[in-house]
Structures are given as structure tokens and as C-alpha cells.
Image (tube, rainbow, N blue to C red; front, side, top):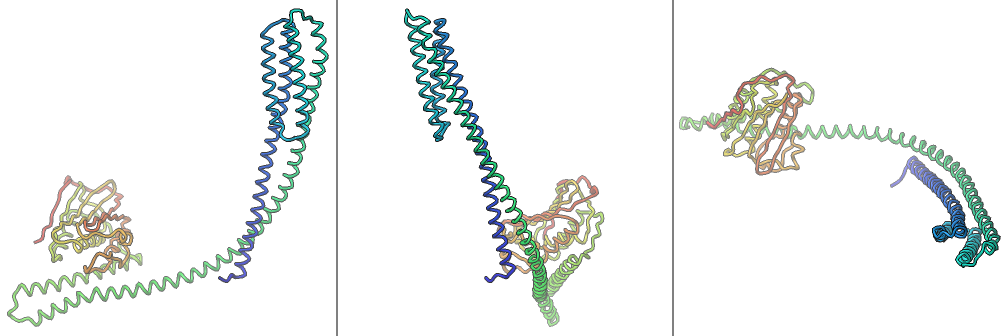
Length: 471
């Protein structure tokens, strides 16, 4: 694929900005890491200083226990001395772990261990002298200078170690501050440069977007024109096909009647007249559907809601369909609630229910009963048409209400694919809804809901059903 000059600039800008942002992100990460390390260093120094102070305090506590035993002979004081010396060993080991690999501190630690060992020897010697029956304070006094000297040396070493820890902390903090300032400057410059590059890239992208939108608008217009042309061609093909069959039947039947002689029975004449009437009704229904769709698409579909008797309307509708139904299906009407009147557009309601019932008749066998159900909920009128026909495959249900769409299991059953599209348009004018449940081989159920802003008039007729049987 050959890239344009603008495309190369955009790709280069994005690549450079990503590189800069990666560098900035890495520097930010290093700054955050540096801050964490500085905090850890401060915490570590505090712990070392505390441990050094605890070591001297423990030595002092052990010395106090020893003196208490020497002066008063209390064994509790002797136990206090031994416990302090045991805890001192643990603290020295902990200090050794805390100091790490610093050579100066390790040397000071060796001296500290040596002095602690010497002090332990002096303490044990003093205690053993006390245990001798003939020991005197004069003998104990001879150990005092050595003990004081040892104590001073230990304090001096601990002081040097504390000063060293402070010095290491100051060096670490100073280095961290210098590094942090340098990284902040780089981060600021990198971020500013990245934003400048991105602004330039976005400007180029905006220009590209405007050009693409213009091209897409032109392409969309061409596609709409092509789709409209295909739709017109499809429409005229469908109309010519759908009109050809009933016209052929009308012409053929009329010719037979014109050429008939007196030997024809009345039954044959009536049969041909019925064929003419049925074909004419089919043509009239197709023209009505086309006109309804055309008016709906143009926004000129009339909507004149009036208070109407729902039960009488449904009975008359079933009788009309039964009269035009050559196979004489059984259609059963059932009012499942106590509502009988509602404010609806009678013509649009006739188109909705007649199309649903016609489909139920078309795709069902005569032996199966078709149900038209009426129900009322709060501010809602509900009609339901149920059949036990061939059903609708699931993959075709989402396209049911598009013009000229029919499922792949209709076989040779004739149809225009306009009926459900008409139902949808008439419902939209009513601000109603339609729901479908179908299973192949078990039938289909269509439910339509009409909102009612005013209370419906009702009578006590709950559960009444009316069946219209073939005559």
C-alpha cells in the first residue's frame, strides 16, 4: 500500500510522540522508584539508629542488673543481667543484617562485638567474685576502671556508627534530589514536545477527517441512489408478478364465462365468479398495502382516532376475512378482559389485524384454529393473533417488518412481503408496539399493544369468546 505524504507525516508524528511519551513514562517511573527508595532509606536509617540506641540501653540495663546483684545479692537482679545480655546478642545480629555491605560500618561492628565480648567477660568475672564467700568490695573496685573504659569505648563506637548512618542518609537524599530535579526537567520538556507533536498530528487528522467525511457523504449519496434504484426495480418486478397472477385468473375466468353455453351448471358459474372476486380482492389488498406504505414513508398517513366498539369491530373483521377465505379456516375471538371500547383509528386497526389474520390463514392448514385475543392492561389495549402454522425461522425474525422480506420456508405460498411492513407503519402512527414469538412447525403469535391516554369504557364481559366457523 502506497502512503501519501500526509499519511507519512502522521505516522512519523505518532511514532515520535509515542517514543517521547515512553521516555517520559520511564522517567516518571524512575522518579517514583527513587522516591520509594528514599523513603525506604529513611526508614532503614531510623531503624538502625533505634537499634544502636537499644543496644546501648540494653548494655546499661545489663550493667544495672550486675550492680544490683553485687550490692544487694538479689538473684532477680542477676536474672535481669542475663536476660539483657541474651537480648543484646539478638540485637547485635539484627544490626549486622541492617548494616549491609558498608565496609566502615562492618569494621565498627567487629570492634563493637569485641568490646561486648570483653564486657561480658568482665561482668562474669565480677559475678563470680561475688559468689565467692570471701570476696570484698575492694576486689570488685579493681574491675571498675576496666568496665568504665569498656563502656566508653562502646558508646564511642555506637556514636560513630550513628554519625555514619546520618552521613549515608544525607548523601542518598542529596543524590535523589539532584536526580529527581534532572528527571523532572527532562519529563517536562518531553511532555511539552509530545503535546506539540500530537497537536500537529491531530490537525492533519482533522483535515483527513473532513476529506473522508466529504468522500463518504458522496459515496453514501451514490449508495442511496443505487439502493433506491434497486428498490424501484424490485418493487416494479414484484408488482408486475403479483398483479400478473390475479389478472390471469380474472381474464381466464371471464373468458370461460363468456364462452360458456347453457350446459354449464350454476355451481361452475358461481365457482368462476368467486375466482374473479378473490383475485380482485387480492389486487385491491396489494394496492392498499402499497398506498399505505407510500403515505407512511411520505409522512402523510392519516391518523383519526375515535372511540370504537372493539368486540363488534373484531367480529366484523373476522366475518370479512371468512367471506374471502376459500379454505374456510376457523377463527376464534376471545375477549380476555372487561374492556369493549377504546380510542383508535379504525382504518389503521383494520389494516393491522387484517394483515396479521391473513398471514395466519395463509400459513396455516384449515384444520387448525386461529385465535384473535383481546386484552386490556393499565392504559394499554392488547391484541394477539395466534396460529398453529408453519412458523418463522429465528434467523428471519429480525427482518420480518422490512418490505419484501419473506422467510425461506414459505415454499410456494404466494405473498408480497408487504403485510408486516404495513402493520409496523400503522403501529408507529399509534405509537404502539409489536412482539412476535414463533417456532418452526408449531405456529406463530403476534402481540400488538396500543397505548391509551384516556380510560377505556368497559362492560362486565370478561372471558367471553366468539367463534366464527366456516359456513
